[in-house]
Image 1 (cartoon, rainbow, N blue to C red):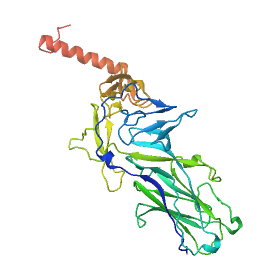
Image 2 (spheres, rainbow, N blue to C red):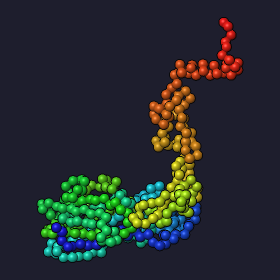
Image 3 (cartoon, one colour):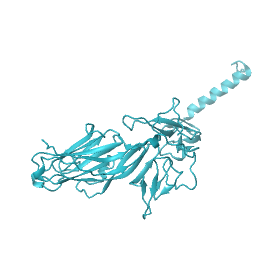
Length: 364
C-alpha cells in the first residue's frame, strides 16, 4: 500500500494558443535574410529565427555558444527537425523531486517543480514515441493529463533493503528495481506528475524523473542518473484545422503537395503538409517540393538495369538483350540464342506474308 503522500507537478506545458489557431498566412517564400541553419541543424520553414521567417509558434533561437545551440522558443535545445514526420527532437530537463522524510510518510505534500515550460505553440509529446523513466526507491510516479483523474502512464520502482538510501538498478532494461519505465501512448499538450511513496518505506528521500525518446533510451546506461536532460520527440501540426475535402489546405503552398490530418493531439484536430510521391522538399513554401531523381539514389530506389528519371517517378528496365524485373539484383535474364533465332524466323515469316500475301514458296 502507498501512503497519501502525493504531488502534482507540471512537467510539460505545450499549449496551442489562440494566436496559433488564427495564425496569419506568412510570406510564401523564405527570404535570403532567414538563417538557414544553426550549427549542424537545418532550420526549414515553418521554423525560423528572424521575424518574418517563421510561422507563429515556430520561432527558434540560435545561441551564441560555441558550437551554437538551436533553442525552441528560447527554452529547449533542439536536436533535429523532421518536416516529413512533423517532429522536432529536443532535450528535456530531468525532474528531481524531494520526498517526505520517513517520519512524514503519512502526511500530504504538494510541490511546484517545473521541468519544461513552453507558453505557446503547436507541440505535443509524440504519441507512442516517448517513455516515462523513473529512478528511486519504493516510489510510484503517475504521468497525467491536465486533470488528475486522467492517468496517461505510470510505473513504480522498488529497492532491496540492502540498497536503501541509494539507487539500485538490477538490469539494463530498467524493469522496476531502482528504476522503472513505461510507455506514454497519448499526445496531450499539458502534463502533470504525481509522486506516491509506499507505506513503511525507509528508502531514499528523492526521485528523479525523465521523459525520453524510446528509440534513444538504449544509448544511455541505466546504472547512472548523472544526465541533466534526455532527448524527447515532440510532434507538431501546421494548423489546428482539418484538411479540405480535396486534401488541400492554404498552408500546403507548394505544387505537388497534399494535406494530411493528424491525430497527434488527443481530442483536437490539426493537419500537416507533405510532398507528393516522387517529390521531396518543403511543402510549406512555393515550389518547395522538387522532383526526386531516383536514379541518383539506387540505395533507396534500386535499379539493376537502365534507369531513367521521369517527372514524379522513374523507369527501370532491363538492358537490351535481357528481360525480367530490373528492380532486383538477378531479375534480368539474358535472351538465349535459340529464342533470338525463333524471333528472327517469326519476323521474317511475317514480313514475307505481308509482301506476297501467301505462304507459297518457289519450287526448288
